[in-house]
Image (cartoon, rainbow, N blue to C red; front, side, top):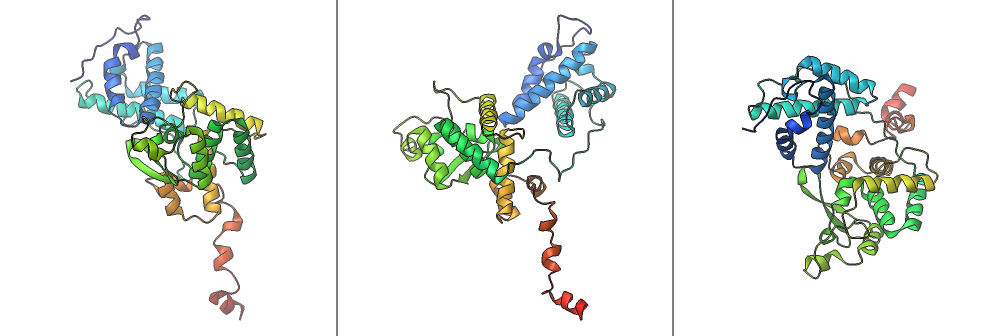
Length: 315
């Protein structure tokens, strides 16, 4: 059983995050994905701060507190997907707390969550011309910028997958990455993408794998430290501004761009799903920004005059 301590409500010197650090830490550590741990940590911190403002103990919160928290996050401008994730995180925490006998019920169990359209996304993909401008700008900026933008656009990998990829996993036509949950996967690399990565690391992955050099991350700072995700996003935003792109920029925009261009070029949905590492094809469909174009309607094919039934109707 994880040791927990009840706090005295309305004590300005005590916070839920500090008093229940052991329980919160154990809960977060139960998730294998670094991204899940990071996002759930942020969500838990927000919830603890909300409870602190009202002098409420984390382990004494009720459904009423959760309802108010949900409304407060919506008022603060959280998108439906973000609000739903925050509530899911809080609910997951209380479910974990039940398993270690810290609480007996989950106050978030029956809290209504925003409805999220599985077939819709607000992330805007780049056009082909915008993508090329961004890549050209990255090439002129630095080998690291070039390698990152080329990799994200050409393969659609997540930024976390790119930044945790190692030189040992790099070869002339593929890259070993770790998906959500820590599972290994192999993504194909176009020749120009592999060349950009080689230019960055200055050594072939096969040489690293044979022990000629210690395995290191592909994307690092000048000092050799891991390239922080926030700094990588700052670089992408700077490059987009320099390229004259006015759309909001993030690594996820490049992932959407890859998916949309792939479908435009005729890549089957199930192949794209495998490439992106999606378990649910509906998730992949959200990345297809061209699916609502009338020009893509099946009516244009099925309703062609050359079809048998059209000839029958016109006779």
